[in-house]
Amino acid sequence: MTSNTYTFPVLSIIRAFAIVAIINSAFNFTYSNIQTNCYPFSPYSMKLKFILLFTLTIIFCQLVAAQSKLKAIKAGKVIDVVSGTVLNQQVILIDSNTIVNIGAGLAIPANAEVIDLSNATVLPGLIDCHTHITSQPSGDYYGDIFRKTPMDYAVTAHIYAKRTLQAGFTTCRDVGAAAFIDVALRNAINSGEIEGPRLQVATLFIGSTGSHGDLNGFSPFLSFQLPKEMMGVADGIDALRKQVRYNIKYGADVIKFGAGAGVLSEEESVGAPQFSLEEMKAIVEEAKMWGRKTCAHAHGTDAIKQAIRAGVASVEHGSFLDAEAIQLMKQQGTYLVADIYNDDYIMSEYKRLGYPQKILDKEQLVGRTQRESFAKAVKGGVKIAYGTDAGVYPHGWNGKQFYYMVKYGLTPIQAIQAATINAADLLGWKERVGSITKGKWADIIAIEGNPLDDVTLLEKVKFVMKDGKVYKNELKK
Image (cartoon, rainbow, N blue to C red; front, side, top):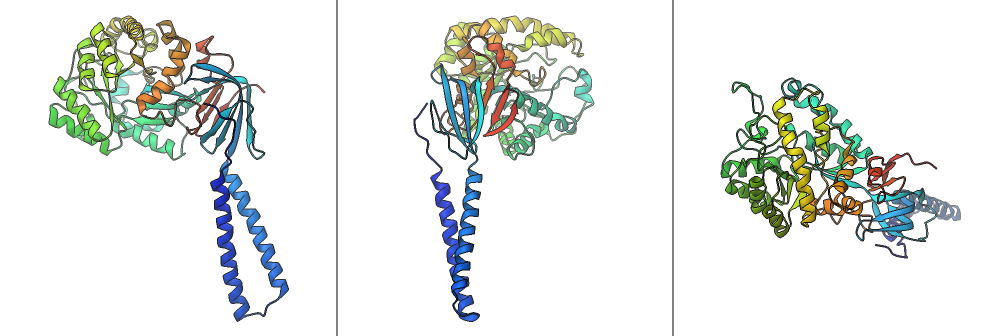
């Protein structure tokens, strides 16, 4: 992870000399024409040429130096998530948006901006693999469904994105949003128009008729004026393949589907399969053909096992795991993304927020069992990636889940790895994010204290850098 040398941006110097050489050639050409056609040779002309060329050289060298945007972070402690160790008194060198070196005692270039985090613990930017960043409950369950349009959600999505970034989550996989709001949000963040985490988005949740992904419990005469494909509801192999293509056409980075029933919807079951194995395989195969991973919403045991056999990259929730499901996940390398904090919030707040008793009853059934299943999965050696279902509870609270992951079996460093290198691997971005390593994007956070002693400190992130840009610094000098 460390090295004792720092490579200056040689390419930038070469570019500067190339520019000066071009200017010199252009000047010689112009000067030659002036001399031939207008004025005789004069030593004052040569002096003028030298002064102009020297001035231009200085200007372009300054521009190149400014463009390099060198930063040096002095870190008191660094959590090395790859080795699972703590490194002391490290220097992290950053050029633009990339980490170019890290180590103890590194020389800091004279033109680098120095960021002093010597009294803090530094970690890679955190990753949440299961968010719904475009919405959260307003307190009016039926109003959220029937009175709001996608435009209502779109105009507030940037608020939740900023809160998530401020909480230290520099990357998220957003697994379901209406009307491609998540695509527009991702693009606006990428272009620098608004602040937020780097996003992989699933766009439309793919569900069967009457499933967790469909509107249940209401009159069949209700109609939403959207293109049929924009509802995400499809049945049968051909229709599902078409739906996958539709999602990808309009911007999906990952495909999310409902392998089984859910909690926060009004269908009767909480866990029964809602696609056949053949339908699930069709979704996974189609997504893979287009270079996309798949994740499956699944609470029930049979739905979980069918999704694993179909080849999904991750099972979301995974509430009712049995020994066979755990063994299958280990064999297939399937990640478990279990949202084991939000049961507390749902049971304490959702009645006040107007949710039907049917939903509260289902959560009562699922919450404790999901945590027990998580503990079994940890003990059984299943790969764990961090995912919270943020949007079910207020955005920006993503860090609250660390405590529960440790309570139900992970060590603090394992919980941190779930939200860094493991999550990066699940997203297919392990070469870009997930650790403070040379060549990766400069996504860096800092806290006061040691999270290996108290993992709840990750609920209080004080410093946030994403892509080499500082978005938050509340650390005491």
